Length: 338
Image (tube, rainbow, N blue to C red; front, side):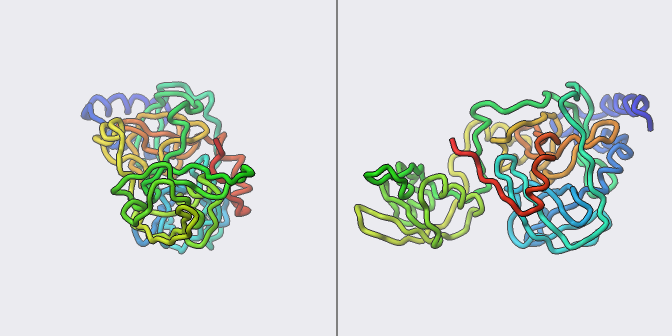
């Protein structure tokens, strides 16, 4: 199907589709995109954790290397290929600023994607999200060109992460050296509060790992989930104490988050990316991590977050390609300090 005939088919399909937030997943609107996503589908896999679908993945090297959305990974990982075969997977590295993870399966001769730049993609152009089957996951249009995020969307907040329910700050000794994460405030219903921790307690260890400051504490919590139990060693008025705390989810979602989630679940990590291409596609959190194509089938990036009711963010290819070699080599990158 040519681009011109595809565009005509899309107009007819959209006229016959309901005017709702779910239009991007309507079968009539997705049907004309089958040929558009065909090549990218061969490079799209299903990521599973503890036998549950948790994300999509994009094949980037033929010998089993796949990128996906890092903050959705949990449990024993496996990858289901388009032909239905499933393999155990290993997480090699993560890049926190982009929320990308590189995972590996022991399979050869896979079909990697070829990325194309996004900066010249016009607003209003049609896009499609590839999937491991023949159909597109969702379709939509570019609603805002590639751009860096601004405050507060440039701050990394990961609601998938386990929370202690505290506001930590760096504790420094008399020489100015950071020696722990001091609890400036805590919520009574949070994991720390229920475990018996108090304001001004200084966290110095988590599960036997030294906590030199609040940045390290946050980094360790990134890899933990609500329901996980951690051992904490704290200093309280100079006396060392130990506690066991069960992590919770985010206790107080914002009013905006509640309103945005009315159209379906939002991604737990949906902020803090270096740049995004914005689309009105409705992509479920468990379908993030897969490639997005234009009408010519060119892969512009990967779906990185369901950010709003009708707002999905694409991590542009320009921000992906420079990371692939280091991720493949197992080099992780933490969040930038502020």
